[in-house]
Each structure stands twice: as C-alpha cells, then as structure tokens.
Amino acid sequence: QVQLVESGGGLVQAGGSLKLSCAASGRTFSSYAMGWFRQAPGKEREFVAAISWSGSSTYYADSVKGRLTISRDNAKNTVYLQMNSLKAEDTAVYYCAADRSHSLYLAVVDREYDYWGQGTQVTVSS
Image (tube, rainbow, N blue to C red; front, side):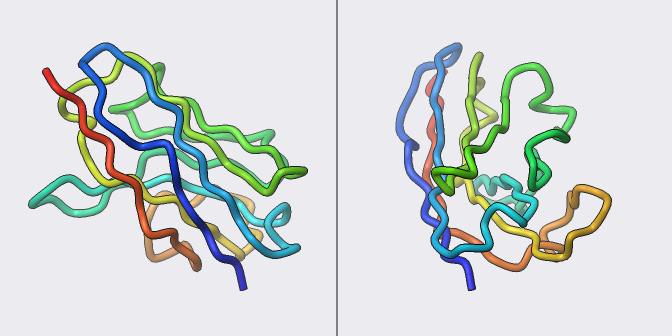
C-alpha cells in the first residue's frame, strides 16, 4: 500500500512558476512509475506527465511539453512537477498517482494507476 500526499499548489500569475511535490509512504515507492494528472472545473481528469521508476524515462502531454518537468528522488520518496510559464488554462486540481504494474510503457490513462493523492489546487490568474 502506498499513500500519496501532494503539496505546493497555490495562486500564481500567468507566466509564473510553481513546483508541486508528492510525498509517498511505503517501501515500494522506488519500484513504481509515477504520474501527474489534473482536473479543471467541469472537465474530465487529464494526463499531464509520467516518469519511470528509475527516472530515466518521462512522457508529457502535448499541452505541457516544454513548460512542465516531472522528476523524482527515490531517496526521499518524492516525485515533483516543476511548472514554468504557467497559463490560465493550467488552472486545475493536480493529482499524483502511482502505477504498480511494472509495465514497460508509461501509462497515460488514469485507470492504469493504482494509488492516488488527494490533490492540490493550482490557480493561474491572467
């Protein structure tokens, strides 16, 4: 069992930056691929980024490529999402998730993930 807790959300002006963190409990964190998703009001939850268990592979949604960076520190049981050049359309609740399947491919759909955090609100003012 893995418990995930996100932090770092807040209110920022367009063009600004935020860094989200997701702290995981449990000894198995370092063996799981991790992902970030987001859900804006009135919209479905959407994939943002994913990272392999080692950190050697990453994958991004086209809408965030070049602006958001996912990383992880397995010694600290933490995954990060550095968010730069933020836009109003990035406003959403951001969730981190863990995939225990050990698949060769990074999952981009939420049903492939097994554990979820409670989310952290990111609001970008234009």
